[in-house]
Image (cartoon, rainbow over all chains, first blue to last red; front, side, top):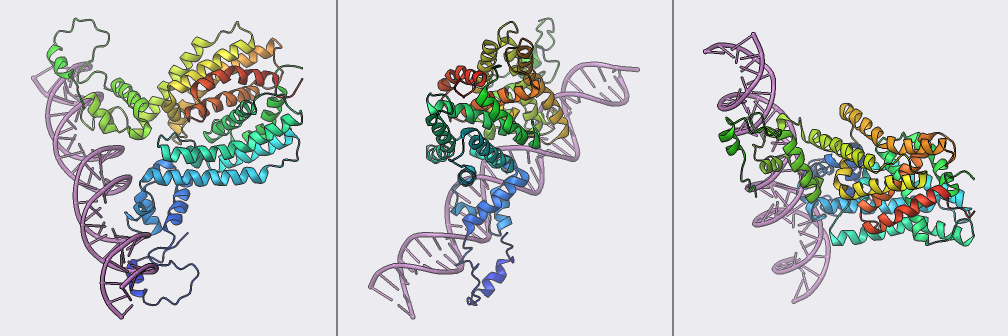
Length: 218
Length: 218
DNA sequence: CCTACAATGCTGTCAATGACAACAATGATG
DNA sequence: CATCATTGTTGTCATTGACAGCATTGTAGG
């Protein structure tokens, strides 16, 4: 993305001719540096992992000087935080799209589980960031809010099932924790190659089944 | 920093007196650089996190030159791998100590779960390393073996319970995945401050209970 | 129009770091 | 004692994150 026809020399030279009317024009300096950086960062993240993500290389990829990112992100961690936030955003969308409040609990939970697992596998490196422990009070707040929005999907499904008498009573938050832990654990195992991707997707049914009916013989 | 009341001066001076019969003797230059590095690394890891772990600072802490660690660890990742391996070692010990094959399934699983959660919380940063995705074929093998040893505890408990008819039949590996995922998910949530430590320890009982009996009303 | 001013980008620089090469000391081996 | 493998040391490099100071662009007042 943002091929950057390169060389600022050209840019400086062409600047007077401002009538090219390209909608993708950059108002002045770069236009969308912030978004460009985030986009490029996410690609690098996906392809080479968090460890190989450097602000300077990012700047090079996008075609700006090595200090330009500093105008949009106080430091590297700030960029990572922004990345994580956008991750929660998309995850919430994915869960939203997969959730059908009209369904009975088991298929509803299965759908949510599939969506979560799918997102986790498609964005393993991003998840690492999203679940990274931070201690900065500012960022932590936003993260917590984002997490709540995500967990909210599960919790609503649980609460609805309780009201319909489909599952046992009890603090919905507690039951949600159980269900969420199982799903997250499965995703975590899979992201770490301890379980094959296809095996994990196949295991979703089974996990939900066992969660609902338990391991004891009936 | 580097208080280092210093040992090598003493070592060099005392070396001739080789009759002290200390099993922890250092053959020559430093003696136990490798273990010293690992120990120091783990302390730093616990106190300041993976990100603030530098080979050079480690070398300073231990009192050797900045390149000395290179003799024992090809690169930083090699050190981290070794750290992770030792983590699996201790985790296996913890699980071993907590496992009582004579117990019925529910209390046995509860004990294992407590042990796992306890280890996870006491070694959150280490767990990050242990569960980090690596792509080096060599290290990956050792990791996989270590993981198997750990999961083995769970799987044995599951298989034993099946033989006693305490839980349903089915591929023990599959059931173990369900149980393991739930426990790991809980540990992961807690390590990331999404669940309070005491709440998590308290939730263990509940999680095991729900795993066994399911969420459906009976 | 022309001059502050804010936003955004650039060049320059620094200290820290990981990796490596060349060299030195130590102890084992024959 | 001579040779050699281990293990450490010093020296050096490129990369990186962070920061300071300057330049460019667009905007707002006069």
